[in-house]
Amino acid sequence: MLTLVEQVADSSATILIQGESGTGKELVARAIHERSGRRAGPFVAVNCAALPETLLESELFGYEKGAFTGAAGRKEGRFELANGGTLFLDEVADLSLVTQPKILRVLQEGEFERLGATRSIQVDVRIVAATNQDLADMVKDKRFREDLYYRLNVITVRVPPLRERHEDIRVLAQHYLRVYAAKNGRKLEGFSNEALERLESLRVAGQRARAGEPHRAHGPARAKGPDRCRGSPRGGRGGEAAAARRDSRAGRHSAGGHRATTARRDLAHHRRQQDAGGEAPWHRCAHRRAQARTS
Image (cartoon, rainbow, N blue to C red; front, side, top):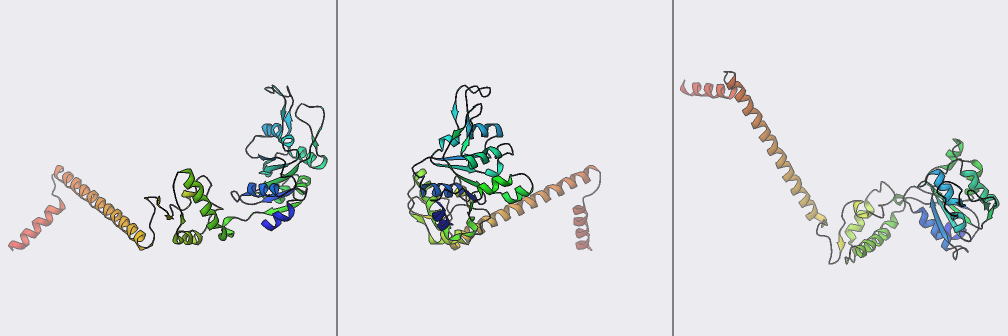
């Protein structure tokens, strides 16, 4: 993938980045921009799924004063702001069928109009788009324009999920350890070999741990350094023995609770028998045993 990024970065072709959520598609887009001849220009990112249709159009193309209620002044859109650089359209599959032809016109003609404007604006922008959906299937279902699809899909870069590149786990683990150690004022040298081997042996269900909560991915891992977390498992037999002791205590607590519940139920039954004038079963048994001893 990185070899392909190096090859296509310096071209002017539109690039479509495909990959599952969380695989780092925006990082790939930034890498393409920084290796291109437009690196001195702006890199502007827009999440097409995060904005409603009406707001997205004004964000992309801008608007003139009085174009709609609340438009108190002129505003430049993202295409203008990205002039001379790169515009990254994330989640491009979420573009509405109303907005898609306007994007297509910019790709074909290099021009657009602000909302409420009467003249076109020329821009020099390279578009890099990304999606986690299959645009080809969306074209078949008439949910995405075929001509826009082919305009965007000049070069395709596929970003594989983490479960297909286990060799990156150590690098990512060390990176996030440095980031969050600095954020929390901790001094951690790195992960133990045991912890790294366990991380690499785990089956990764998704792509990666969220950048905001890496410690939730598979629980705390053993780190080396003076500020190792007190709650971190020490691993090996010690960790397994501690887990066994916890399970044993939980089992005893559960069994004790069951016995207490049974005793309370028997006592209640005995009281009901007495209230009804009968004799409890355990009294009858005791009476029979006494008769057997005297006979």
